[in-house]
Structure formats: C-alpha cells, structure tokens
Length: 170
Image 1 (cartoon, rainbow, N blue to C red):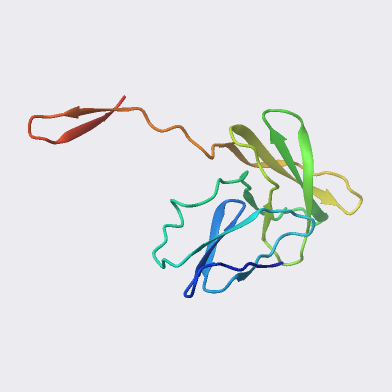
Image 2 (image 1 turned 135 degrees about the vertical axis):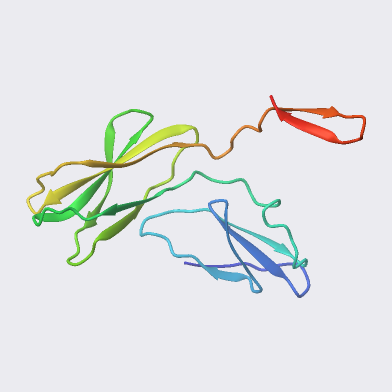
C-alpha cells in the first residue's frame, strides 16, 4: 500500500515513518510504500520536520504489539506437503495461526506471527502435514516472554567528595 501525506512545513521537509510504532525510514517526500501480508492491518504514523537531524527515536510514537519472525528448516519426511504453525499464549491451548506450503528444493522457511501482547509468554511449534492432512512430529521452535516496555533498572547514586557520581545496582 502507498501512504501519502502533506505537510504544512516549508521545504525542505523530512518525513519520518513508523509502522506499528517501529521506525520504518525517512523520506524527502510525503509518500512511502509499505508491503503487508494479505488481510493484515497496521498503524502507520509519520512525523514531519524541517530538521534533518530530527531525533526519530526520542520522538517515536507509542509502540504497538510486537510480532515475531519464526524460522525453521524443512522436514526430512518426503511426504510433507505443508507445515502448520501453532502458537501458545500464556500457557494456554495451542492455536493454529497459519500454514506454510512445502517447496521442492527449499530448506529454510519463515513465518511472521500476528500481533503479540506485552508481558505474555508465547511458544510456537511447527507441525509437518502430508497431503491428506495427517500430522507428523511437532517441533517447538521458540518460546519467548514478550516484554516491550521493561521497567527501569533500580540503582542508587552517591556523590563522592571528588565530585564524581558513583552508580550501583540496587
């Protein structure tokens, strides 16, 4: 999809683009192309500035839920026709989140998850399926606690006579 915006600033104008809160690039024009999976929805934010040294990290919009790119290798079973991707959130039941077709000669596959909730433990597994839909042995490929906004570390600061500040973990 192509997103176009206009600015009330006078040239030169720099546009800082964000997709789901993650920095996606800077352009000198008010248009940018984003490629999304079919049926997917994302939030696009753009900040305009006349300052080429604009701090796009400090001024970033609030981030949106994370996604993960899962990477796995093909099954050794020649009968495999496709792979089912399952996801478990918070220790709950496994849910099917997608399928990936087996391709002749391909060894590595990727799959991008949907949006993930902060402070939730996720696990993913890949299940090889034959052409009749019979499942092979599932392989758990990842487990991760999603933490997008970690708490600041606890520390103490003390002023020493030499006017140096010493920091220590609390």
